[in-house]
Image 1 (cartoon, rainbow, N blue to C red):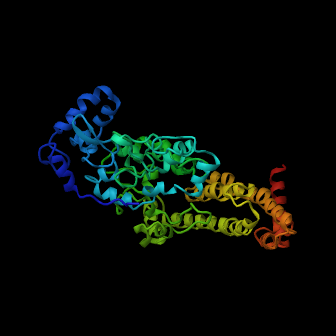
Image 2 (image 1 turned 180 degrees about the horizontal axis):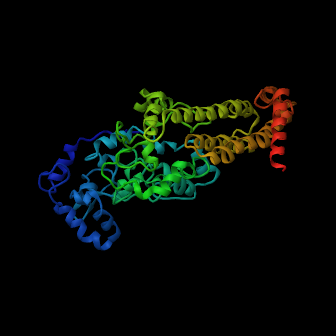
Length: 482
C-alpha cells in the first residue's frame, strides 16, 4: 500500500500557471482562473448549494476554485474528460498537499489515515460474513460484497475506491468520506472526513459534532462520553464564546471557556503547535483487548510515531490540560485513569484472554460460530473499551454503568458459565487432545476464580474484607433508615 508522499507547493504553481496568471500574493491566486470560472458557469446553476458552500470558504477568498482542486492529468487512474479538461471527482490528500503540505504530511503519519486497513480484520469479518453476504454486486465487485460493510464499516474507516472505465467510480466504494479511504492515486485518507466539502471549514472541524460520525456507538462512544463530561457540558453552555471561526485558534488566547475534541487532541496552545496527527497526545491505545502504549501500535503499523513514547505524548496532553487546570488536578486525573486501566487489565482482560485461548481447541473453528466468541468480543471490544474511554475522558456513567458494570455482568453471568460448560462437556472427550484442553481450561478457570479479584464469586472473600463490607452496609442503612 503506497504511503502519502509530501508534494511540494511549487507543483501547485506548475498546475496553476497552466490555468491562470502567476502567483502575485503570499497565499492564493491574484484572481480566479479562467478554467474555474468555466466550471462555475454551470455548477452555480446545477449545484447551487455546492457553489454557495465554496463561496463562503477561504478557498473562494484566495481565488482557489473548482479546477485548482479537481484538475487531473491524462493517464491518472480516475481522470476523465469533462468539458474539454481532464478532472477527477475525488480530491485526495495528495491533491490537498499541493497547498497544505505540512498538514497533509502530519495526517499521513496518523492512525486516522490508516483507517481502511481494517479491511480483512475481525471487525470486517462481522460485517462481511456474520452480518452480511455477497449479494451486493457491482462492476468493481463482480463476485459480490456485503452491503453491511459498504454502508457501515467502510463509511467511517474508508475503503479502496475502485475506478471503472471512463473515470467513473464504483458505487460500492463511492460515495465515501471514510477517514482512511484508499484513493485511486495511492494516497490514504480523506481530508473531507473532517473538513466537509466544499466549505472545508475549520469551524466545522473544531466542533465536536465533526467527530460524531464515527466516534460514537457501543464500541467507541467518545462523542457521547464527551457530552456527559464536564468538558462537553461547558461546551454546550459557552459554545458561542469559543471564537471557533478565528483563523488563529490558540487555547488561552482566542478562547478559554471550554474545550472541544480538537482542542485536546490536535489544536494549538500557547507553546504547542497545531498537529493533524491526533495520536501524539494519547498515552494509551485502548482499541485492543489489552490496552497498549501508542508507540507500540505505531511501530506495528510502520508509522513515525514509533519514536515518540507515551510519556512525551502524555506531556503533550498535559500541556493542554494545564491551560485550565492546576498541576495537582492534572496529575491526579492521570493516576485515576491509569488505575482504571490497571483494574480492567488485571481483573478481566488478561485472565479473559488466557481463558479464551485455552478454550479455542474446544470450539467450532469458525469465528463467531460459538456463543463464547460473541461474549468475549463484547466484553473487550464494547464494554471494556467503553470503560477505558470513559475514564480517559471523565465520563463516569460510561466508565461504570456502560463500562465496568457490563464487563463484570457478562464475565460472571455469561463468560464463566460458558467456559465451565465447555470444560465439563469435553472432560471425557474421546479425543485425548480435547480432554487435555478441557482439563487445562478448567484448571485455569479455577485459578482465576480463586484469585483475590474473583474470590467473592464463590463466597471466598477475605474475612477482613467481608467484615469491612458488612460494616459499610450497616452504616449505609443507618444513614438512610431515619
